[in-house]
Image (tube, helix red, strand yellow):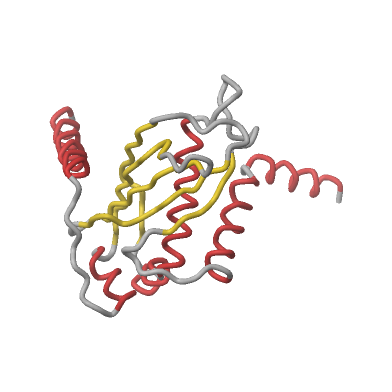
Length: 195
């Protein structure tokens, strides 16, 4: 019996238990306690920079932790807007295909922030989120990111229509997003040429 519990503890420790616990907490709170939102409206979650988030300078969020927090922001948005339900009903899959992030100022240790997540554009195969980290004490955007979600097994517009049951108008893409989309296309072409 001791051997089984030792193996179980070893597996839990190797699986980054805190991440999955946080997914569960954000998922349950989005489903049960927070209000539903329109899929094109922004949603916000709150966080604080803890000692688990800091980098080797020991005073601000590690760059990788921003990207990880963005997972929780999209999880919240997809559950509250009904996109996950639409994905499940259509047997589609959402995969992060690309991310770009701009760090403007650090989020320092023990500073609370809000992470805003919103779908800002889509095409035939992808949805594009904008996600902003905003510190509460000064309402300053500390980091801003775009995330390209590839929609496999469906089209983004079909997923959104299933959620809203109304005509959805494609928002005009911001210029910086269009530049990034073009960069991704060029990068893909360059990689295909090198094969």
